[in-house]
Length: 206
Ligand code: ADP
Ligand code: TYD
Figure 1 (cartoon, rainbow, N blue to C red):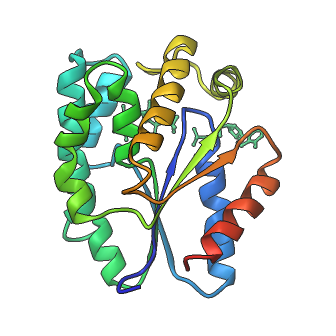
Figure 2 (figure 1 turned 180 degrees about the vertical axis):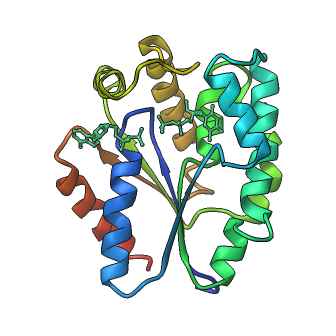
């Protein structure tokens, strides 16, 4: 491997991505790695704009939202101070909570998935994950988990959409399986069990 490991966590809302990132980070650190964790949308200016749309403060159509994610993602990769390339250069293993597969799945529900893939080609060309981990849970469970932790729901957080997004994830994971290293894990289990399986997989590429 010529650079440090770059891993993306994927899954519908409430699938346990941030929980698993915390557990994977501990496992990597215990094995002596420096770990940087990050997420999308970012905390940068475009990420904030996206969050305003998700929280119903600003209105935008789906194609506009998809375009904003492309811009936010390039910032996420290339920011001079805390961009993912910079962190990899500094010797960190980088784990991101969502990357372009999220765009394919969430926006592929609303527009041709080829369009979304093409609009992300630059990001994929600059920085491709060594491993995409997809945590699969049933959408009902995801919605239950989200509802427990939130006062209000974001734009895409309906049961109907979660179901469509899950299906779209499977469609694009299958479509891109020759170009991307994808690992699917069953998220309907205890967090530690899932974390163990993820750790066994990560150990094969670390
Ligand atoms: P995401 O980042 O994918 O939205 P989180 O890790 O924030 O998911 O988890 C959403 C909620 O579900 C949190 O309250 C978390 O504690 C809970 N949770 C996460 N993983 C599990 C699991 N395996 N079983 C039960 N609850 C879980
Ligand atoms: P976030 O608050 O990170 O979701 P989570 O509940 O998983 O922590 O919000 C991310 C939202 O953005 C989520 O609904 C998925 C959506 N999204 C897209 O629509 N396109 C994308 O490219 C990405 C990365 C996320």
